[in-house]
Length: 65
Image (cartoon, one colour):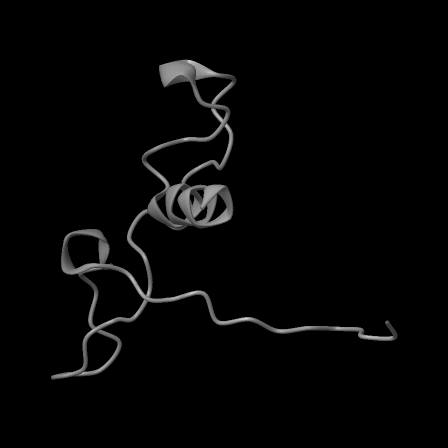
């Protein structure tokens, strides 16, 4: 189709999964918490990805829809 280099914004974290750090006073982070946790966990918990990496878990659920 000739479409290259697509960018998609897939969403933002729920409050419970939001990074608690504040980049500036009074400004909340829009990043997922545990973003730098390993993505893969060798099949623990019967899934290939690490459930503690909230962004990886979010994307897995999004793709499965």
